[in-house]
Length: 118
Image (cartoon, rainbow, N blue to C red):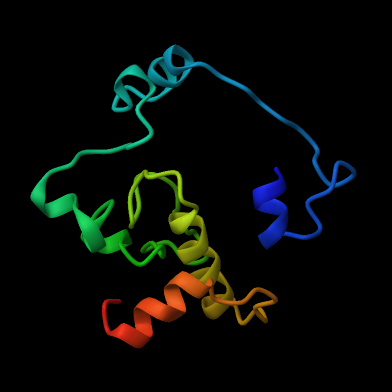
């Protein structure tokens, strides 16, 4: 929670409505493609890898359905528990809905852009 609060300062106990803890078995029972609770959801096949996750139509976090967005382990950059998919989705949602971004780009991303690796 402390790590998340660095990026979401209003994430206080007063703002948390519900928490849920599960085991790898719970995850596999709910999501059949998350074998043994794997955090790398979805297929890892060529047409669903990298920037094409989860599929070509939804790879930018937008979907063909207006105002419906996707994020999480099944989207780019995949399930690596680095908050990347959520960050990408938040940026897409803010841009498409005209919401002012109150967050700044992480230093790691800024440096990658400067080096031309992103």
